[in-house]
Image 1 (tube, rainbow over the protein chains, first blue to last red):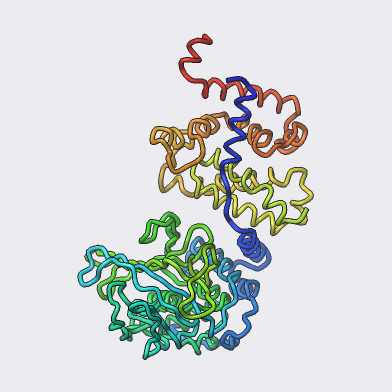
Image 2: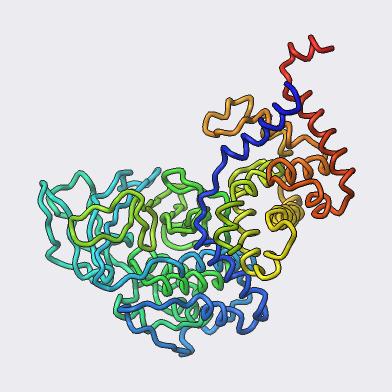
Length: 331
Length: 165
């Protein structure tokens, strides 16, 4: 091997590697960097960041400013700086997502993975088509497109996300819904814009199941349920992640993996209540798209959801094209 | 040059340059994305830098050092050269990169690796490399020559080494 061959071999390595991060995502992240530099770190910083992330959302629910002092009123002093930094990055990516109208149809397919969870089985769920404001839902049963008789309203299923229809169930019998998000889709526009106010508001709500609990955990669960129940306008999604960065007790694991083994960043919170010991919201390490959720049981059982596909489509029954950009989920 | 054009042209080379030093693809990707984000946030000044790609790589590696300082209290991080050696041992079937070459690059002394990165991966000329590293052009040439000698020795099959000695 001579010198030229060494040089060629080294340069070949460069030609074999490809970065797939879109420039739009880099720019969104750059906006966060710029925001970090410009605004003071403490009071007012998050409000300014939310403003910097704001995007125009035509046709979305009227999103009005609100500073109502709802909720526990606790300051977010316990929030971790590293968590907030990651939350900013995820929020920036979310804010750069495509615009979504309430009537926009979305193709949505999830998988559940239940490990040592009695009563649950790991399986793919039937794909559904639902409008962003979940008033209309359709799925294919026996080769026919079926519209659900009872639209899910504000709660799609017990687990959030699309209606819970196991792939093996072709009868549509699973049209009943459990609890979903505590905030109705029409009420999303009334949520406080300031992340700390949003945290306080969501922390004052009860769990979707109706039970009380400590405000940080209630805020976390309500953020999780909103993210996994609705396909929201990008700005709302961004503001929820900003608020998540302000929830005390939240940790970030940058080296997590979702139910499908996809590299993930997990926002988690310890949860000593009910059957669960820890809850998590997972986003992809590259692109910061919502991948799913995880619940770790007190008995070390794991219940995970993984979004296989969530993409905007032109109507019910229409399959997303390969490589199509997702809504606010993963492709 | 606008930022998008610069990003498209240099992102792969920057990623490879950082990967050589950190050894982990996901970590390298995150560092490079963050460095490009900072470049965008300061594009007015970065675009006037004599070698913007070198600025990105330097920024990414500085961030890597900061992370390492934070994390070393928690876990001991593996040496990138060892990481690539392990990959070579496992066949590294999922990576198109040659782990032998990546390991050899990772094992180079820091200054030699920096010169190889700027000269061979980012295609900077000698004077730009010297400017970016704050050393003389003759020092760049000397480091590159030594690095190539080490790499040649590292990459030469054992039998070939025996024959040449």
